[in-house]
Amino acid sequence: MIAKSYTKKGFKIIKLYGWLLSYPMKYKGYLFLFMICGFLLSLYEMASPRFIQYLIDDVIPAKDTNKLMLLLGVLACIYFLQIAIVSIRKLLERIFVEKAVRDLQFSIINQLRRLGFSFYENHPAGGLLSLLNTEVAAVSNLYRNYFPELTEKMILLIVAFITMVAIHPGLCLIAIPCFLAYYLFGPRYERIATLLGLKSREYEKEFNKKMYDSISSLLELRAFRREEWNLSRLTETLQLQNDSLRVQFYNYYKRAAARGISISTGALAVFIYGSVLMHNKEISVGQFVAFTFYYFLFMRVLARITQMLIEQKIFMLQAETVYEFMTREPDVKEAQTYLSEIPDVRGEVEFVGVHFEYPGNRKVIQDFHLHIRPGERVALVGTSGNGKSTLIKLLSRFYDPQLGDILLDGVSIKELPFSHLRGAIGYVFQETYLFGTTVRENILFGKPSAAEDEIISAAKAANAHDFIMQLPSGYETAIGERGVKLSGGQKQRIAIARMFIKNPQIVVLDEATSALDNISELEVQKALYALLRGRTTIAVAHRLSTIADYDRIIVLEHGKIAESGTYDSLISKKGILYELANAHGGLE
Image 1 (cartoon, rainbow, N blue to C red):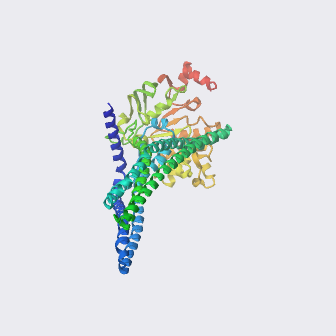
Image 2: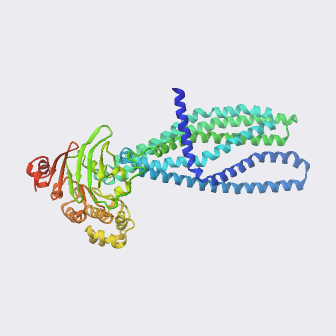
Image 3: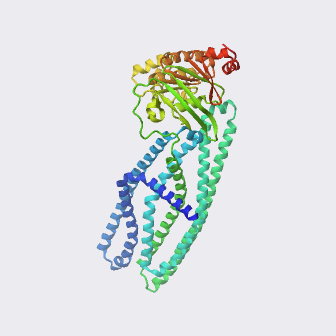
């Protein structure tokens, strides 16, 4: 079982590495040149000590000024060439890392589009923002500092050690205990650093979520005088994060001090033994200087590799979060092969034996049957929790039922592309989401290619043109985040203008006027009457006066149809609708 567990883990790591490398490998030309530059820089680092050894042992004792000047000139040229290579390498790194990270961000955005509503209901927006920022930054660090550099550093470490052995095996033997001591100080501190790093990331995520909530709930915080409470919880999370970072720093300095002692001890041992060897003429001054250079190069590279491995553990865990998100399958999948689009949608809708329940076995819709004729206006009413809003979400495949099917013009909606299905349906919600841009752009949201006359016609049809023209810049007026500069009725009329310009054959109204005052509701109702003419309409309503003239009213109870008929016929029966009408202020 243990071997099987390790095998599974191994396969998972291989898949994770393969997925991570798939993005930069699209730009392997830049990556190859980057690696070449790294190889040349490593060659420079390895050759420099030997060059100095030759200078000390051969050139200077010979007192050959011409040769000395020539070698110093070559050294200067190599030095400036090294600066140029470093600059080119930085440029190549920036190009391929930015391109790879950009592709990853686009992939995440596309994945966000694919995932169903159930995912968003279980994952706060703050966490998703953290995914796009913090976790992607971790992947960027892997591309920038880990994958290419680790290979180079490992080669440099091995070559440096072999060169030290070649210069003097005994001197290298003196340094080995210090190498081991340096490394042995690592594992314990590395484990602590990894755990502290992960804890700090969790606090950062939590802070991002709470900060997002704070911005989104600013009105409620002020209305309930809860600013101090909000500040307190933000400060508490921030303090926990800072405490975690402080412990990380303490751990880092402890590790640095322990390793500093091992490096200094090793250098002292090399200096003492090297001095003895020079005194006994067993090595030259140049060899000793070169060995010392290689010793400090080895320790510096070892330190960098150790640091990279610590960071890599944290970054890989964050990258795994992105990988799990990217490999998550959506609950509602678009068919790989689907029927051709319905040429002219008539608006016939049929629910056939639909059964739906949310996670946790909460049954909402049970064996539901309903046929809606083209152009018919149908209202869904009932107490909260009986499945009204769920039904209209099922219609656009925001969710899929566990059993049964939904037909559009006789065709299963599962056999239609999302773009065609959702293009045939227009929604007006209770809380309309408007973007923080201009009125024009918000109306164009319904049809981006619409011409100027279409925009104005849609606004006029929605009874919105007059109030738009009274705004400071008319259609070019910026309306603030979520349309904060507009009243509730004005926002709903902008939403209706969107529907006019989209021109769907099926219109869904989800409590479209329940949050409005009587005057605003009257203006919106006028716009809705024009919008609904000749279109199939499905309305969810609590204000029964708004659906009294509908062709049919469906009363839902426990996810099933309890009553069906016109408003007057159901009221005369004195059943559930009659009780609902009385409960909402009496019959009108």
